[in-house]
Image (cartoon, rainbow, N blue to C red):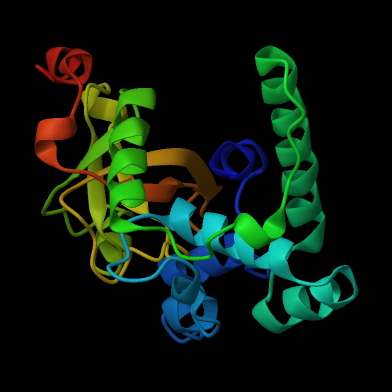
Length: 231
């Protein structure tokens, strides 16, 4: 199920999310983006503490599978989920189950009653470590930077957590945590991101770089090849 989520992407309907990023950037009088995005609390799908956006996607997917087929559209509308993506995840999962069954030469099937809607602490720990190993060059560290008064990033940095991608070029290492992230209120020191987004500012033509679908990790989980490249 987790591989299916990783393959398809987040199922949350953020409604013109890219425009919303620009609102954070340039239009202080616009409705606060964090309030706008989190008026549906998707954290309910991943439990506490919130350590990964991906776990919320996984929890939403499992909840979707456990719904009666006749109630799935209602479930998606109520929780602002994209049904098309959840259906794509379902197809991916069925294909993976078939491939595993063929490899093991046994008949495997999906029984949704066996799915646990809550991810255990042990499962979360295992998956977070696995993510850190799987994306060694998409690890970032939270930093505090003082921008010049005329720097177009200065205003954005006052609203969103700033990160430095480990091992990236100094001229291309800064990223802002996207406001749609469930970790944006309590940003971790180190994280892995599985998606990046660049947005052009219409007023200054500056390019803003964001990271999304992030997972908090511990510093001792950072792979050696990441540390070697960061030196």
